[in-house]
Image (tube, rainbow, N blue to C red):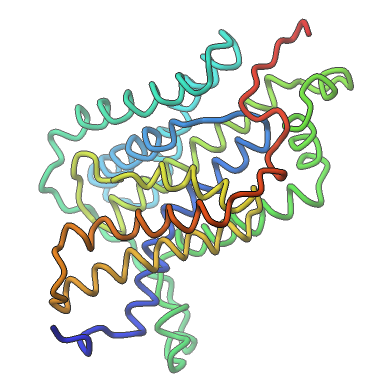
Length: 306
């Protein structure tokens, strides 16, 4: 065992990368739940985005086109959920679980011919002299554009929800869809748009795993990140900035267990691999007891005739 092999700067930079897929998936689901809809299909949308982004990047040679395709793939899959829950009024929990199973199966089918292929690399942003600043430079200024977009998306979501009319309407629909409908707001349309946004974000998060974090395609490679994202929204009390901190908690634990494995710590690798999920779940349970912040209509079906 050699703990000196763990580079603190690389460790911190690494957990920023590890947290990015979770940030995208969780912030998308936060917006969906703010509208009063519960979509348990995040894992399915992420894995679909992972294969759509990977395949597009390989075929076109452009990682950015891959991320665009991932957003479209995740949004299209979420459209199926929107149709089931908002048009046919199917149960949201059952529809979300079905979406995850469908996404896992579809991605396995689409990804058969991409196993063992290396995708094109997305270059890091050139910050010039900023990257040479001691300590801060290697941690904050040596990443790709998608990582920074994830942080910007959290800030933008917070601002929209708190300060804009669109955010107020979205929150109103989530708190009382009947009152929002009585005021003339199109509840089904608003929720559908929120679901599409959530699907696109989940797709980008999945593509980040297959194109940046683990640049290869492997069946089921999202490995439960979508479920952690769902729990993280509750932990964050539906608050974007708290969600960001929770994502970094999970990313930090994930990166730590990888570093401990590399350092040869005398702990079975299975225990190290499961530790990010176990520790994150324990923290979520402890810190998410207050459900008062949950949208009042979360998970409730809207009937236009009501």
